[in-house]
Length: 186
Image 1 (tube, rainbow, N blue to C red):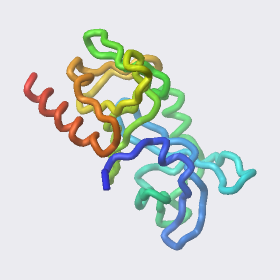
Image 2 (cartoon, rainbow, N blue to C red):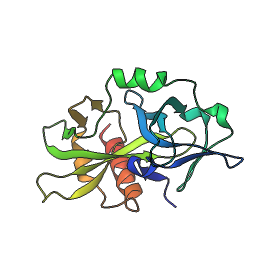
Image 3 (cartoon, helix red, strand yellow):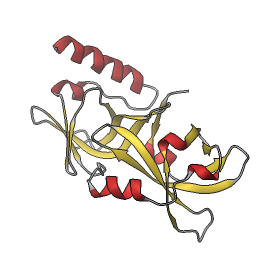
Image 4 (cartoon, helix red, strand yellow):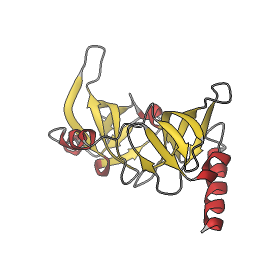
């Protein structure tokens, strides 16, 4: 099993306690773009007519993230309000729809999803792009060095565009190749 997951695969997962209580479901993932990490999940109620909850689930309160659910120890893991997501959203940070560009000005495509490396401290490992120049294909672009991110542009080193993958199975090899290449340039 790959340690990488698309952010869209986490959205709508149920949030359940270790005791089996169904608490909520993931609505959105809130990133800290300055650190390249997942900070929290916004939540919605479960069921057809349930709406958003005014509470966050901070990442450090997540017990486990699996393919079928987000596990928490108990209901106390959910924050009493949604201040974390409000603070981070107010400072910007939505990269979906932004253009990925190299330092040299090459347009790599439009960001359509975020690739997350799971673990105790999940990080943004890359992005799924819809390419402009190659017939609107989708490729996975690893990011292993700090990058500049704004609401409209993601700036990556020139070599990054040479290391893409077509799926999550090939993503680790693309990330290793990019890492090796960038280490050789320093």
